[in-house]
Length: 372
Ligand code: T4K
View 1 (tube, helix red, strand yellow):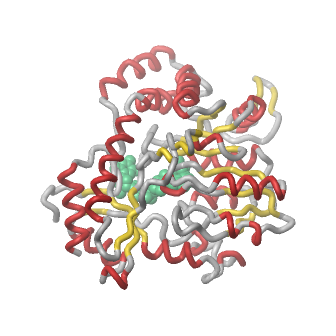
View 2 (cartoon, rainbow, N blue to C red):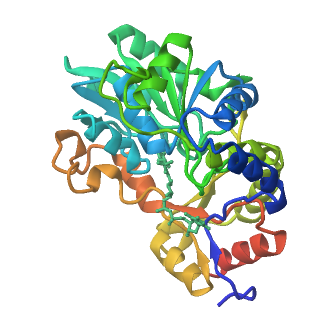
């Protein structure tokens, strides 16, 4: 047990003051307009374009449906190059589109898809690249775009972890053909469930809007087999309220990251990730690597040891997606082909981080890590 009695989880959703929601709810109740591109849906799209610095955004009921729809929108087929080091939804979105994933190893510094290994994986059936900005660490966007241009491939970024991140001052969602966001409860910006696709032109935005609404373009016209993946008015209103607090949440998480780094940086066998030059981070995850040889205990020992103190860390992303049934039989998933991803998945541990995690608890977690 810890001295705080209550378990400390890897994250805790930020919730705005409940009173703030009342006026939105009252308005929704009065209007009786609950979904289907309502007032708050439109307002949140506009507000997110402004906040994120992007031109067009289409809101979704969750990030997974947004990923699936993004692939539909660009008519991606055949084979797609992707990373095994992500949440399983990334690859599932390919599978649901009847697309074969081609797994490629990750970069040892950022844990994102290694551009140096992409070209060797391209086949005549490859149509796109689906990289993930893992933990909010930007992929090597320029190198990836150069490869995509050379081979005529589309790039769809899974940007589920990257709300508000910028590279060299450029909002991250502006890279690639499309970027997909998640507003799940566990994300730095949440609408309970939710997601979005960012695109760069109005025609694509209209297409995506129709795809998430059954393929309807007006009352009597269905142009293609769409799905129902719309964000409802409650989620959208909550999103508007959440936006008022997002800068505070990021700032608070940043302070926590700095305390963690200070406390753990010099512990033998523990590697902490530092800020990347010219990147504005959102500090939504705090992964550390535990080297058993040097630390004396394995990552799993630490995970179990912390649990006994009521600290619930997570092994994001272990096992690798390529090790799950369905994917493990693929040629590109064979053990040994992705040594960096295999090592990181074995050593990584995500420590609790969320705006309400106070300094006392952070220090307790640091001390507990050292004590293990
Ligand atoms: N791409 C990437 C790279 C992603 O990481 C994700 C989602 C997606 C795509 C898909 O986006 P969505 O379709 O989800 O919008 C969680 C989330 O369910 C998942 O959204 C997220 N990635 C993934 C990384 O983490 P779990 O199984 O770890 O969640 P769970 O329920 O164990 O929650 C973790 C901790 O958070 C709990 O121990 C306690 C706390 N928690 C959680 C929830 C749901 C709360 O305090 N309150 C809550 O309501 O997957």
